[in-house]
Image 1 (cartoon, rainbow, N blue to C red):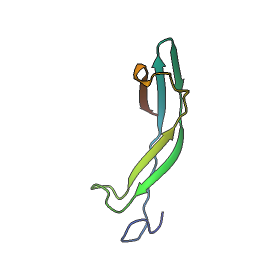
Image 2: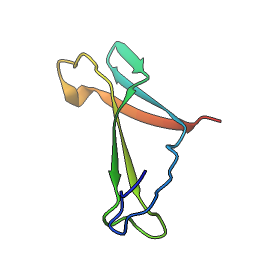
Image 3: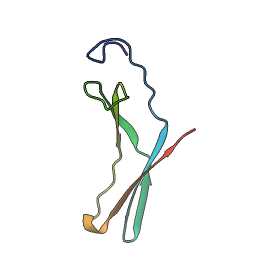
Image 4: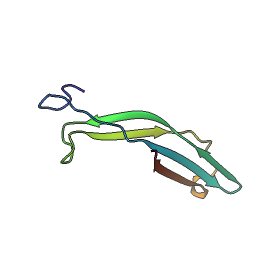
Length: 82
């Protein structure tokens, strides 16, 4: 990418290869989904050293809500994909 940082120039990056799984469990019901990558945010103004760019990935999944959320358990897991 060109001119992404305040000093200009080229920035190269590779998005991580990960698999995200989200599960929702409540009494008598369990559901699991593989969410979709929805948004990629690149922050080049003040990334932590030694990075040139901070990358944030936002994943999205949709579940039917339980009657009482306090009875539900939501778990997000990620694993590297070779």
